[in-house]
Length: 362
Image 1 (tube, rainbow, N blue to C red):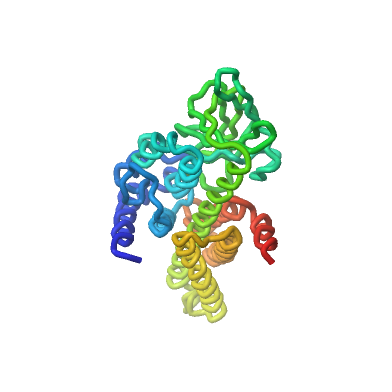
Image 2 (cartoon, one colour; image 1 turned 135 degrees about the horizontal axis):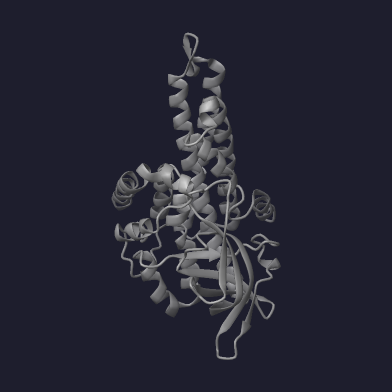
């Protein structure tokens, strides 16, 4: 990486050490990180990847650094809270330049937050099965009716980018977080406990149309590729953290006269996980370069996500097993990573969806 990217890495690492790592356990226990963290990240230049906040930066390398360093702070929920806005902003920018000129700087400065609201109770993220619909209000605007579910920060975002059907075709709408007719219910979740999860209900909620029809679907699929790449980077960082903690534990934990790491069968298992992680990292780093060069395909993004998540799940399983009881209780970091790992296998499209994307290219 060039010196600019490495300077940004140092900036993110300093922010994580000062503002995140000391508080992660408390935020996980309380069920939410404070909204002030978003504003602090904006003022520190993290939300804009170290670039000017006046326009959306096109810097996949710096985005990967942000995702990696936030995840190494110890909680994937913080990463999702502070790095997922690029997916929504990329869609807004591709859909409506006039709206983007107003929204992008506000989000990158940390003045406003934005979340993507796609998933529905009956459809997951299958864009073809949406039931949330938009109707013209007779005054040049639109109103949304329907449900969204499993929306990260959905109950406290300033803006929501919502996918809904308009005249039977997919459309993207921008909705104010305090819009009339918008209700939300908090959901308890297996992992990402520092990131509030919500079910949303739209009841004739006013919304601004950004893009409609085939172009909306094409734009959204392009943005989801970035989300899957983010999740792949996150999975590798979590796996690295869990493996590092496990090696340290096995070096210190003794059974009789020997440390666990001195037992050949356990040392070989950790060596195997290290090897798998090393190979996966090479492909994901290449995928980041492909994204920067405009060559990341849907299949490559799916391969990156599945490969990284598979490695994480094996590492997390062994980490808890080798920590024994220590790995089963809060606030053990490997216990948290074990829980969080399951969400990565579902978010951005489940493993089976990724395989279907890959299979269509054979």
